[in-house]
Length: 276
Image: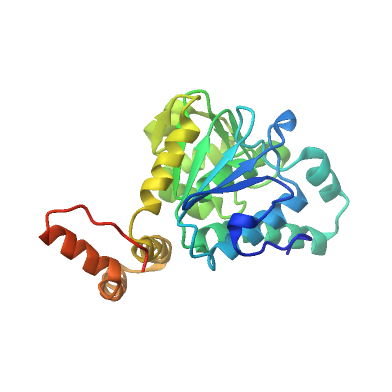
């Protein structure tokens, strides 16, 4: 846990290690150390992890946007604040650190709100992992996504990369990026499926916010169920997945939003979902 526990409601939360605000039903995290290209630190890792875990209990926030300040997303772990101290740690300390960073990915995948990443400029190392762990990624042509771990003598298997990245862009392409550490330009990232959409630098955040707001206006319980099933079904057989989805959909059919959608359809109106 961070030294500054994340508290509810999130609309009143003052983050210490990154920018944070709630705009209507959408919350926005801004990695905001632009002079260093928005690196992650021990403190920001911990606070981000706390934030995403608390999201599971916040009923007002329906979607998330993660972005970076100053024309870059994130350069990854801070060289001096993180990588330097790691050299001096023993195995116990190193494992404590790697497990802590992995908890951020777990928290992002476990929070019920869909997460949209708005990515411009540098998106490297742990920054690329944060983008990868988001549900949707809007990028720019000048973005450069790089899983740089091999460049510092480490394996590509960091924070779930070997599990998640192949499911986004395929095993062969993920292998290339994780073995070489090369930067993936924005247009190629879109062709490969890492970016859902390519946007102009001046509009990428607005476009991501528009998508998040569209999601936030939808059926909250159903969206949370979709995210949960997308995550859980990675480890299921097709038969198990079909059965799990039958149960999930039956639960969704008991929500008020399902009834609202039917009544709106019958009246030839657009449904207005309320999240219950």
